[in-house]
Image 1: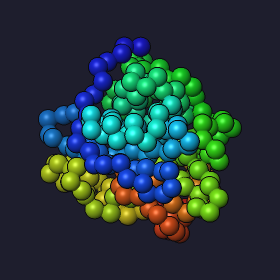
Image 2 (image 1 turned 60 degrees about the horizontal axis):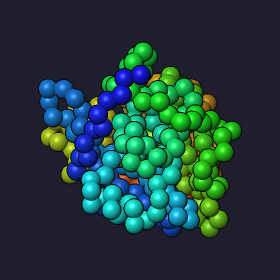
Image 3 (image 1 turned 30 degrees about the vertical axis):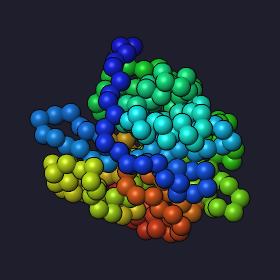
Amino acid sequence: MAPRAHPPALPHGELHEVLPDIFFVTGTIRMPGPLPVSFSRNMTVVREGERLVLINALRLDDEGLKSLDALGKVTDVIHLAAFHGMDDPFYKERYGAKVSVVKGQRYVSGFDTSSSETYFTPDAELDATTNLPLAGARAYVLSGTPPEGLLLLEREGEGGVLVSGDCLQNWQKTDGYFSLAGRLALRAMGFIKPHAIGPAWRKQTKPPLADLLGILDLPFEHVLPAHGSAVIGDAKAKYRPRLEALRGAG
């Protein structure tokens, strides 16, 4: 392992409560390369008592961290998306948080997940049988290469809440965290669609169709994606046509 400096905090919005004790914040990812390709990404924060669990971690600036600390104490980071995780080490160092990843995922730079060089070692791996650090929560794993996780949080009276990495997206339009190059590139690649299945993620990881269709067997009403806006209410019905269309898509 070759540890690296923490990436800096990039522009982001404010934490806002989308469901009781569930908070959502949108920020920026900036891709390396000759063109300034930037676009948005999201972090979900779940509060349980005085504890906070971060999902799809996004480094916040000093003011953002003050707002986070006002909510509670960060104790856990859950890493769902195989191509995310750059800010997990920051939260490990700052709070001593336990970092859990989907079994089979590794922290590598770029998109070559077979690279022998990693920059961080998580504290634990998780799968569908793991007891997660939240009441009523369980993982659903898509067994692609590398695997991807979804976190299902079941709370009485709310309907199920599904937190997604790159699998379920909801970029209905570009936002203020996109650079011009990012807008052009992601539109051309088919990312800017409501209630979508991540196109580049699916192409690279090749998850089994049965795993994708299995999402429809999960009891959820809301989706909090790593990319795009939150889907509050009727989320399964909104994603169903996209998922079922995969049956004939090859």
